[in-house]
Amino acid sequence: MSFLTSVVYMLFAITAVNGNPLSRRGTRPTSTIVGLPETVPDTITGQLYQAYQPYLEVLNGCVPYPAVDVDGNTNEGLPLTGSQNSGCKSNLGQIYARGFDGANGRYAIMYSWYMPKDSPSKGLGHRHEWEGVIVWLVSNSSTSASNILAVCPSAHGDWNCSKLFLLSGTGPLVSYFSIWPVNHQMWLGAEKGGQQPLIAWESLPDAAKNALQTTNFGSATVPFKDSTFAGNIAKATF
Image (tube, rainbow, N blue to C red; front, top):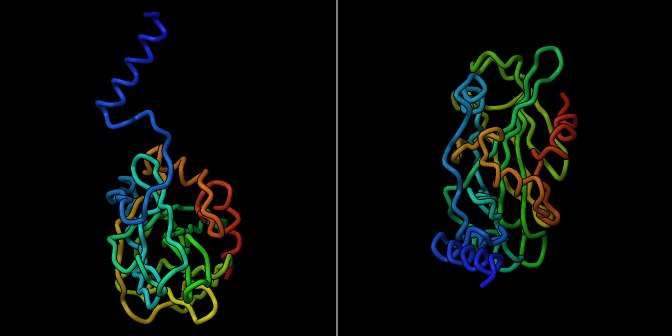
């Protein structure tokens, strides 16, 4: 047996013992993606992320699901069959946060959610959904409610900023729903919804971050990846 052949056999043996670590990461069924535990930097930045995390009320459509797991496997999404929330009614979910240093000392936090589909009704919409909220702050050194300048829910590629919003503590109230036959979007909310385990951009495992940077989610785009983040922040004006 040649040296090269021996190495190949050894790699296959390692793969069998360790659960196929050599396999290429890819998509996994929606129900099997395990989200990441809440993780933020142990700094004022992490405190900001947690202080201003929105409360999300889902009025129709899918609830948030994890988009990626610790190994970089991504959610394969759901087909446009059944009702608006068919196959996506209940999950612990995940919320992703990334901060931005703006002009004049201002600071913005983008919070983002993934849903497996955006379907106003059977056959309408698209597989995969990314929505979010940008919270503009006076500064990055305070976690008080008065530090909030504007709250900007996402809607079809835009960010609709407002200085008039409701809070629970320091968390903005937002809602997610569709007015048929238009696809779903985020709105400013009136009722306190739920929160999901928060994972900061800078706290993502490398495999998960790389997957979010490179995965094609079809008609939905990760709003906080490097190639889209600054452009989305620039749209959130008030």
